[in-house]
Structure formats: C-alpha cells, structure tokens
Length: 267
Image (cartoon, rainbow, N blue to C red; front, side, top):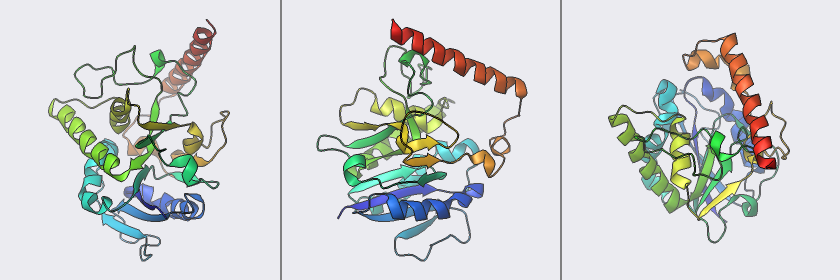
C-alpha cells in the first residue's frame, strides 16, 4: 500500500469546497493507497479535522494572488513531514473526484517522477497560442518555439523526493521574480510549465482529471472542476472589475484562437 500526501489549500471562502472534496477523494481516488490530507486553512473548525488522516495546518489568508503565488512557500512549512510519503499530490480546492481513479492510471510510471494534467482550455491549441510567460526576464519565460503542451496548475504531483524538489525549486524561481518586481502571467502555473519544459520524466495526463463543469470537451469527466462563481463572487475576491466589453473580447479571442488552431493543424 502506497502512502499518499494530498496537499489542499482552503483559506477564506474556499473552505466551502473541503467537505465534498474530502468525501469524494476518499471514495474514489487511489483506492488501494493510504491518503493523508494536509489542509492549509484559516478556518476555526474544519470538517473531519479529528480524523486520523486529516491534518489541519494553520495558514493565513494571503489574498489574491498570494494564495496561489506563494503556494510552494506554504507547502515548505511541512517539508519534513512530506518526506515520509511515497507520493505527493496537490489539488485545487474546488475539485470533486467523480469516479474511481486507480494507481496505475495516475501515479508516475517506472521511468517517470512527476505528474501533470493538460489544461482543458488549451488542449487543442498549437504552441503559438499557449499562454506561457513571454517576459524574458522572468524565470518562467518560455519562447514561442518551445513547448509541446500547456498544463494546468490545479493538479500536479509525483514521487515524494521529486515533488519536494519541485516545491523548493519553484519557490526560489518565484521569489527571484518577485525580487525583480515580476509576477508571471499565470503565477505558479506559469512556473510549473517552465519547470517541466523539455523534461522526459513527466507523466502528462489528459484534461479528464481537471474537467471544468461548464465545459464540453471529448474526454471522460473523472475529476470535476467546480465553477467557483456559483459559490462566491470571484471578481470581488480577485479585485477584478466586471466588464461586459472584456467578456465579449475574451470570448471573441477564444473563438479566433481555436479557429486559427484548426486551420494551422490542417496545413
């Protein structure tokens, strides 16, 4: 039986997702393994906090984008505990496991050390349109002629020693950027994409394992990504100004991008 460490951040409003996350992952995720959940939260009380496999770690709410940008710094607080596990996985708070996910389909294979998931919003695009960090001064920089796929930041993991190394390396990369006054385009996700670039020891999974509930893509829904806007005001949380014009522009650019990708692939 493998020992799996599950890393989970739910500060502020995000604590609302924890109960359904825990219950679904206990039921369906890696059923032949023992799972310990490390829950970083500012909540006074937490569902299942007295369970043997739930470890509540007090964590101040760093706001936006601190909770995602400082993710690896947060994880480093329990680095010594994590070294006792076989595998470590991080999951976004608003995920639900919907069907059995076996060890064989989700753990690194013999010649692999890390596991990532293709981003469902970019899975059919060509590298020209991937939203990599393009600032040459950033540690997350990827040139336009590099990269085979774009992966999401919400699901990743691997063998314990390799993931602990990832935690330390990405914390250093992000801190180096911050010292220069740089924040990568998509924060930890941008740095993760740079970290796995051109590595041959990474298992890349299809977007079934981070499937947005309002999407319709040709993959089975194994881990569902809940729409946060149904639970709280995401724009307010991220200090975004709602704009109909911006929404229309975003939709239009997505349509143009996907149409261009189809045409270029046919050539």
